[in-house]
Length: 529
Image 1 (cartoon, rainbow, N blue to C red):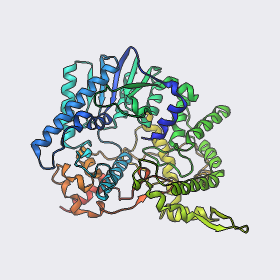
Image 2 (image 1 turned 90 degrees about the vertical axis):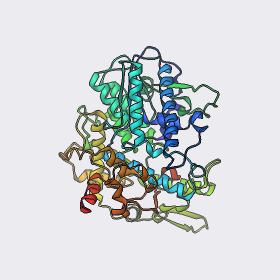
Image 3 (image 1 turned 45 degrees about the vertical axis):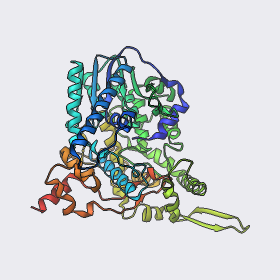
Image 4 (image 1 turned 120 degrees about the vertical axis):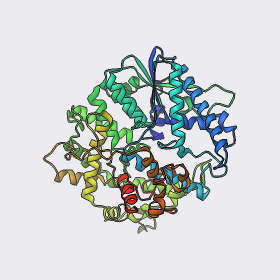
């Protein structure tokens, strides 16, 4: 999910959920990819000049240095956790299509910003972080080095490298569920998904001793340590966090997770009116309190979405949708007047200049000569004409509801998911449209729409080709896959716009590029035979 505001707000509101030490840790799990990114920024690596592309031996030596830093950091985190006998290292492998889509738009966006000179890395040569993707030579090296480290450390160390499919955090949760892991468990990593998954898995295996472990600054401390300082770590007490937000037991945590999905995550986008970086978390807790009072739950004990309860929520949010939409637009325009904050790159404020929401509003002067701005009478039509061009409302509503159940199945492991599924738009339907859709569909009570299959198996090399921009195409080793940009150049545009509706800053926006699926890539290659 990767939503910084979620961490910041919960830490500010519940500072008592953090501590500096956990005793008697029996199992340490690494959601590993974030550790590699951290090591790239380590003082030992920043002191080394990155070789030019094509200098094979020099690049191998630089990457060997990075791998040494990775292994050193693993041991450092292990020591911080108390040197537990059991360690599980989970590296991201091939992920579901919904995640692949996200990786593609992010990588294309980063490449575009480097070309435009607006990326912080554009002014100096840097290592291509797209190498941290399944299917690259570097990930093969990383896997071998981690297996060597595990063998050196002893029997209790287990590695799931990038050649095994699955997101790192989901590999961890699957292992904890399968083994009904007991004792004190520390999980290195901090992503909004990891908080929710760990809360839920802890309840599912009846373990109240799950902790998240991360560098102190990632929890909100102002500065990283200087090169001569020791890295500080901190632990997040998940049981205390559940107590503070008022959730207890599998059912309540499952419903908290379900409600959080309405705020957006890696698989469903957030709306323009309800976002975690505004008052979204308060909305989630308010709905949860209402469910406790009424006994009507969004997710039942079997993990199934109750669409009649979803209808109640959407209808309630639809009633305040117009006011919230206007509030969001006013706040964005006010920010445009102030400009970007101190220390921010000017390019971050581009969405303020684009002002794409202007199609939904009218500006004028009242009878007493005061300027005003208000939503047009037909603003919802403009939303669908301009923000959602060419969208089939019913289909989009259906996919959104399906996506909510898909997330529940994925998070709990209660049912196989269709790994080929992805939400087909940049933004969800309006709450009013979802309420209308659910009202017409009344009669069923589940988000299930029948079996959609489990999705095509995607190989690491295929995922790599699906997410890489042309600037990183040298990382592709498969000769057949290397032909794709020449065969389908429309899939690798050099210029494109960004989806910025309801977003103030460029970091929130996604590149509007075509999505390449594994099936489409195979069709392109087959057609060229």
